[in-house]
Length: 174
Image (cartoon, rainbow, N blue to C red; front, side, top):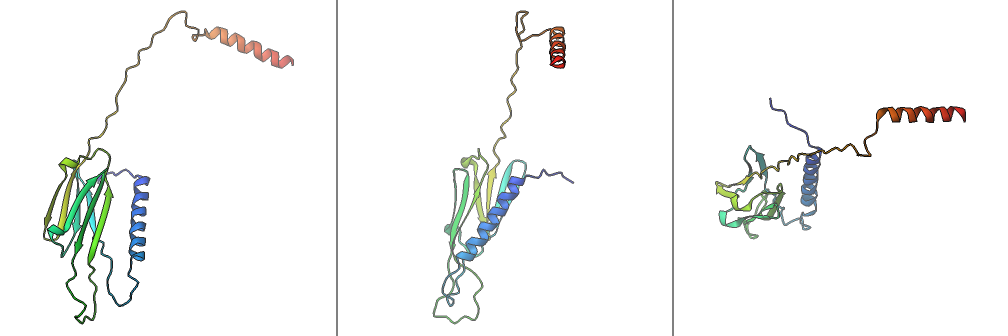
C-alpha cells in the first residue's frame, strides 16, 4: 500500500473546481423550456505517473477537427464543439444528449514545457500527455565561520554568571 501525503490546498482546489462546475451548469441552462438544449461539459480524468501527467477526456460524437488543445501560462484548455444531429422540424419525444460548444481548463504546475505536450484522439477519447516539470532542488550553501580572540560577541561564562549574581542581590535589597 502506497502512502500518499495529504495536501489540504489541493483538496480545496478540487472542491472549488467542482463548485464552479456545478454553478456553471446550473446557471447556463437555457431559459426556454421547449428548446431541450443543455450545456455539455465532457468528463475528464487527470492521472499522474512518475514522469508525466495523462489527461483523458471523453468526447463522443466529436470529430478530431472540432477539438483544440492549448497550453498558455500553465493553463491547459481543451475546447471544441459537438454538432446537433437533429433539426427543429423532427418530432422527438425525449432529448437527453447535450451538444454545442464546450471548454475545460486545468492549471498545471509551474515549469511545464509546452513543446513536449502531446495529444492524440482515438474513438472519441482525447488523450493529452504532459511531461512533469523538473523539481527544483534546494541549493546547499556551506557557511564558513571565522572567529577571532578580539570578538566582542564572545563572553566569558564566569563574567556573565558573576554579573547575574550581582543583579539578583541588588533586586533582593530593593
